[in-house]
Length: 289
Image (cartoon, rainbow, N blue to C red; front, side, top):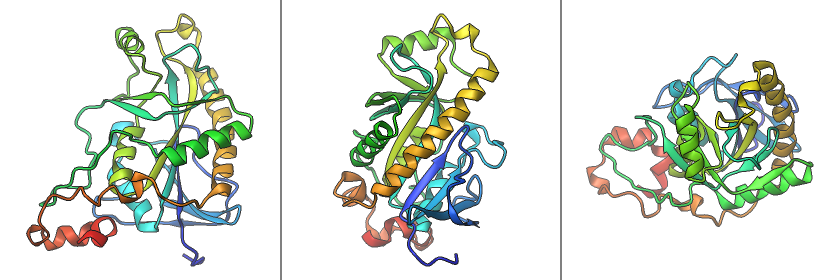
């Protein structure tokens, strides 16, 4: 990379947000990780004086299904770049009347409805168990909410994001069940990112961008693809403004649990850990071994 300044802020762009056109000094960075290739080259640039790395979650041209995403490579690549704060933008469906299309929800909880997705860096002779009761960084989430309010977005603080497998959307029975559980929004991607970011000791927050109501809503059958695409584009514009404002408020002190998530999590005795595993996971566990 031509600019030697550290890259401490990362952005994951979801459906509709495939680039950060506001970047100055743009360059692509291709990384190889122990877990394979990330979804795309990282776009690195300067935003309001800060060095920021951006990754299009679904790859160039939106080619990757949620179930096909290499979550480990994506998050590990951010760790290799030195990222400490990671802001994720993601399209979601609304499970409650008060979350209207074009609103932003900044959730503080997840419910896992995925099946068999790999969502840990550990294994291969190294065991660690992080605490995950509060899966999103409270500090970064607060900054995201305040930034959304500052740019005039309709934002809701807190709530539960149901992470489903997809690529099909919910059945009506499933949608009604999630509402009966008082869930708030539903998407297909962010839970695994949050788990891996916590293992990597990266602060992670989600901008859940509402495109439409899930199928429980009586008006759902009137929603067209064109309407959803238009909402995706509008949400992307809003998310870009929010992200820019968050970037302008960073860095802050990292006194949250994210910054030291592994300090008491590694169970395996150091002498029992394979040398190759130590090398592969050095960006994450090196300071503890």
